[in-house]
Length: 153
Image 1 (cartoon, rainbow, N blue to C red):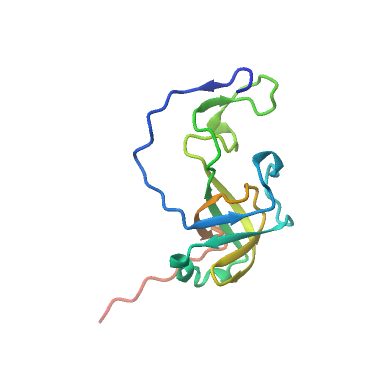
Image 2: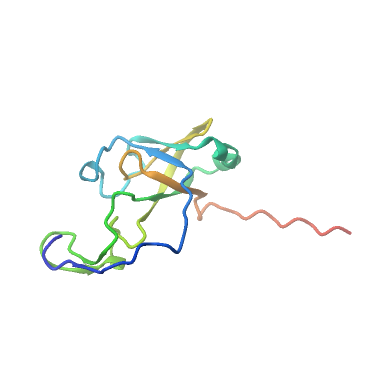
């Protein structure tokens, strides 16, 4: 903990169950090595999906950018005030993009490089190698919802 940071006492989590769909492979072995934010021209990273989710990738290659949601499994979950610059100036957790959160869900808008089998290759991530993968979605700015099916006559 840094000067002026505050924690809250938490009961064990019991209100949601997440299902990891795979693992993220990056060049960064720990949080200290990770970039602060991903870059579209950063190194290629792999999203390795569990085999049961491979069919869920159908159609994703049509999007040049996708949103990746991941679980920051090495993060603290109890800080309510954080001092990101180590200078004693505190900010509420919800005013920061810190991985330290009550529910440490990371998001990244990444450039899709390719899909082969159950592996999605992207650029623009900023997480530790082996991070659990939660979900993938087309970039919301590029997504056009499909028309609803026509009613039977």
